[in-house]
Length: 566
Image (cartoon, rainbow, N blue to C red; front, side, top):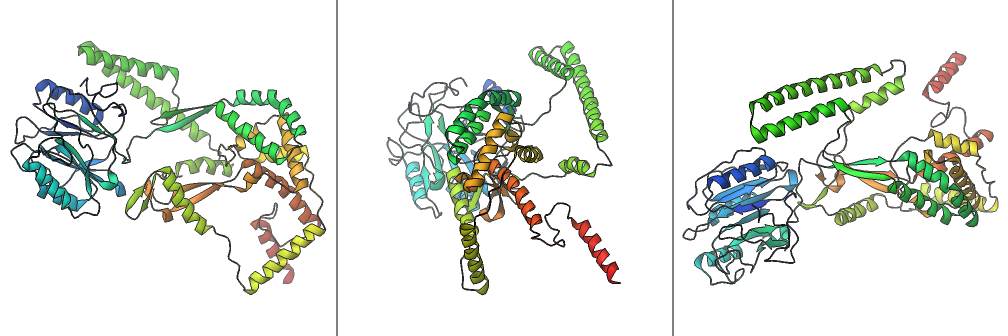
């Protein structure tokens, strides 16, 4: 197996990419004279890659050839019903939902016919089928050797297929046999699934060269890596404090304009990215106490020693340590759960439901592909283009018609614009206390809009930076101008179903606006409500979306009016 994982450039194809065995791909290996020590080697591979570490052996029709398929254990795979016990052939169904495709690997001895009837039956089930194997078929369409009858029959079969897409041979004109220039190990795929990224590796001991093909197929696996972010918030806050004088001077030089504030937002976004480390992990695991970590490491040490020596002493130590680790973990988790349940306060209803809803909240599956015309689109650029076309039509501007409502709305809008131009209102004046109060009321969230600035960044801004924000906000209110990107929302699509691949009409969008724009809106809302109250714009009966005017106040008012009328 040493040459199979050859680390350097391939001798047969120097321009090919390096072969990385850690990637979750499908590898097909032609087995030639599988001996006992080679069988043990494959068993070791299966223990790492497959769900069942046993190696199932089936007799073929030739002592010098066969087929074997190794699939990563995280990929959903099953044998195709009706093709289980066919000699020299393995037919698998790989993937889930709309991403299913079939993988067929076949060995055809030199003096036997290629099983075209079986291939036709498999293609009738699913045309998205990849056929690989040693066919011992030579034809000038894919091999630099003399043609043989099997090559002609294979060429005629490929030409006569009645499928929606033609079947192409990937590895053309690259010798796969060590004894001649013939290309007899073939990879046959539909045209929409084909790619030319393949490599022929040096021989690993038999009379065939291994062929590695990197497909463009996106396989959904059960193993996922989750990004874990760790931000040094204290260090970031200290950094902002020491840079406040520079930004104060720059703000004065640029007269607190929108151009300056755009530059300032960019600075905050890039700074927080420099103070953030991102690592990828397979699972979310909480931090364990040091004594449990020590026990776990001790258990791993005993396991390693037992596998190396198979000594009875290490077997007993491994058994005792495993039981101790399980018992300690159970006690620790039980204590954490009891402490968590004890933190619930029956009197604080809001806090109770904030904690309780975490156990009943189901997260939406990330959208990894769109189903368009029975095909899956998974590239980011194509997915963005599909979503853009769909939601631009959904959010299109209102088409003005000649109805009475539209005519009246246009007249009112024109009159309002004339009043604002001829009699401009006094600009609102935001003070430092109002700004601090609004910043303190913002939720401590890490989500951000197109500017990359989150609520949490705004909440930890030191006073010298808040004074910059205050001056810019007052300038925006006076000039009636805001940064142009404040009117652009970052859209994230969530799937309405539990599937990661869905149609575009089964998604729902959420829009993330820049956090500074929402801060400015809240500051404007303070003065807007004051103006409404000073000029008595809204009657007392209007209770919706007003502080101290909830539903209970309205019910008490209605009951009081009914009582006065009796």
